[in-house]
Length: 358
Image (tube, rainbow, N blue to C red; front, top):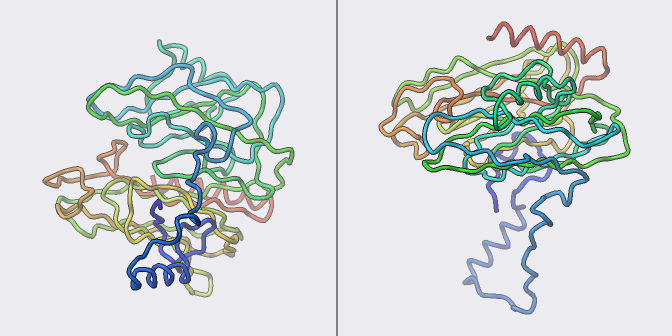
């Protein structure tokens, strides 16, 4: 069973990979009785792999890198941007999307964006093979509004909620940004994106609210180095999903809300972060937070020799950065304001917040 990082009782999530009290009791009783084998004739059939490896079933459309990208054996991490035309002639509404990394052991994460102007394509054509390096994308390359379209190790694809499909227009390029880290030998990477369509246009447009912290400077040997950030909501929202991100030194992740009456509501608690099992988590029911609520993120890091995930032995000073051996801190929330006017207010205020933090 893949590990489930969120702690129970600190946010209720859909599709939680946890055993119920009844299931745990059954296992404990079976162990206490000696772990005897049951009737082999009643054994369930072995699970089968999905067709083509797609977890959500065969997509309506697959967009794949036309040729593999060769990653050098040594050196710094690479941010490679691939631009692929999407072969559709009319608008489609997307209810789900799935990323197949092709070579997951060297992909730190993937960011999925779209460009309708051709600007990203022009940049990519300047190189042979086509593509361009770097974290910076042209302003014309954007993610679908309010969506968490990306991939990290361990992330599972999910179908968007009712009314939350998003439009995919004709004459659009897929801009796939791959963060790659060398493995010590030449590696081939050929990723693909699967799209699942619906006839239902969106009735709501969510907003992606990010709480990052860029001021990270962890001394060598520090066991409980903490960073924190907060944001005061200017409008009412419903919180739909949460997505934490950090690298190898992160230990504990807290996300919570201080309501206008001073009470505290947990949104996420991960007591033992695992870089290899990332993902975003959808709440079982949207979490309503009124205007004036303070949303808080607090991450703790362990840069000691006792941290088995520490890539540096002996430990060294680690700061914020783009390399896998650097560190990051971000807690992102997919939220749904009440209406378009509130969404515009939130977008402007949130942009101001990010500008001040930077």
